[in-house]
Length: 282
Length: 292
Image (cartoon, rainbow over all chains, first blue to last red):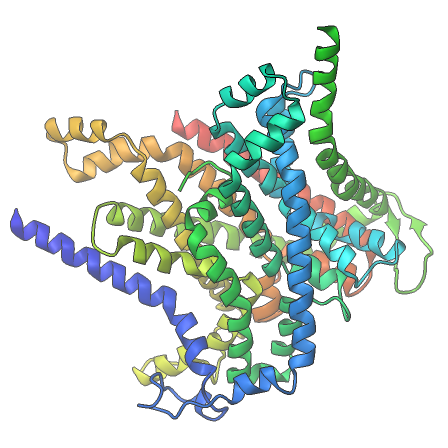
């Protein structure tokens, strides 16, 4: 019996470590490579100082010569992410609250919710062509406005579902007694429901920002110069002949990867919950 | 009293209408527009002239070998990633479903891949899989194995993309299933243990049936997400070699926004939508049947 338990523990740790190595290895390579010189990046070395002398060349290049282009893309990504997420949060809360608290007789609440969910399931490329033509007709291609609209479309279904889920978890009684005391529906929503679910609201905002930060299809279709987001900017770099400049590509990848990572770690529970539309509470 | 009911029935629309109107403008209207466009021949790069050709675009899709090849690859990709990620995730989750030291630490490690933007993941793996200079081939050579043409061999490149997806999304299956396992009622397991059920029996006859609704949801979510494959194709292989890794999303994108073949791209969009719809209904139905 004791032997069996030992074997199980050993097995558990072997699997844990193998899976961790497999998961972390690409990140580790990017980190190490970003501190190499070009020639070193083609050698099989892993440990700085011991195996190779670290160089900050790739990082100084990013913050030096090409910083203007990258800074523009970073600003675009941050602006698009924060504005689109704010609108997503506002619309999502309103709609989620409605689906959670009010009764829609003609179109059932469930039908509206399912319809909104199905919009998230739909492959975005299906509306890409007409949206592109629409933006061109409005002459807002390659502006913040076009990409913000697209990212609201991308994130709103999820926000509605999560908000609905959070409000469903709140007990109705507080709002009901406030209504009896003469509070309006708006008042009950603004003064009671919103503050009580504030941590959920923060989660919606940050998740939506993370997805906007990484969104690529609409970004590459709707922007080409002024409004390119960071993912689009680095893609045009790593797909060019510069793609073999591993230290530089690694540094750029890290700049794209680290912000959402840092934002997501404290939200780990909400991330699973969000990706499964509340089906799993995490 | 009457007034109260009336205002009550009005105010709910203020809450939901902005969202519904937004979707009508940004999804329903574009979809109808795409349907209309799909009956026209319109090369936007030449000019605004649109020729009505009826079902011509759809007829051309039937004869389009590139479309069928892409459909075949996309289906292969979706099937492979769902099967591999589900079985790995299920195995790992049932192994990790116990108390051990540093559990939260490992949870956070496994969370990392799915927080990364897919296009950055594509860049990362493009670098690792580089045929001559990539670290994976260097490692293979170092231990005496032959080089693998990860992105340039037509029979291997599709598998490379599957590997990247498995890397990024197996953790999702793992963490979701782990969370589901941890919310299972403990007393059933206690009862099974009292009755002398073995580990394997418990897993097969209790865990799996209890999990099956969650598994259905996860499979559907992963399948639908995998259907959207675009970034890995764009960033790692560019559709090649010989078009073997071109996904349907990528094909529609290039017909529309590289060749500006708007009518044909719109027709493809609708065909793609119907395929995804049909397959998700089919998956849902067949998995429901199996559960009974």
